[in-house]
Length: 193
Ligand code: GAR
Image (tube, rainbow, N blue to C red):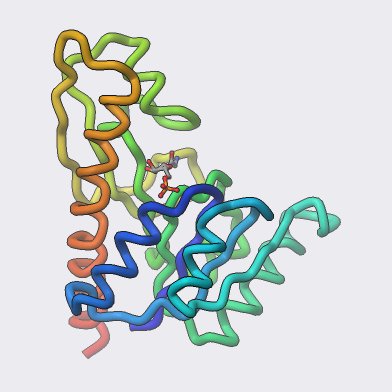
């Protein structure tokens, strides 16, 4: 299956996906990385893996529709079948949603529907919850609202710092996302046949 990864930042989840692809744990090829931030370290990681990386900045387009059409054109050039959001910090608009219906998945660092939106780890930490976690879900027009595919919890112990919580969450993410992506690939594959 031909995959595109979208990222805005560090790209540790992109890295985990690449490692799983290289191990054969994800039966797919990452054809390209789409990035909206010029300084995102994810761009460097893509180069390291020989994956074409494309920068699309909304400020270079008149409308969000034009921005997404440019991305869509690139995805079609590479025959992408599934989009993997990995720390891509933008809402997906109708242009991409309609072209990739039920073919866009996202990872979010909380147990949705708790703590959607920005800085979910900080939100959970500030709320002093004792359990948080990671959600993988299909993307719809809302903010972190699409159908949930899988979740895994972490415990927040007395004395844990925000950084401790972040480390626990990211450890789960790097294991859960590849596993869930492979499950989605298998499901899409079996629907096709
Ligand atoms: C991850 O924790 C991901 O769950 C989160 O951004 C981080 C990206 O890290 N995504 C969201 O908050 C989406 N709403 P990474 O760049 O190291 O993969």
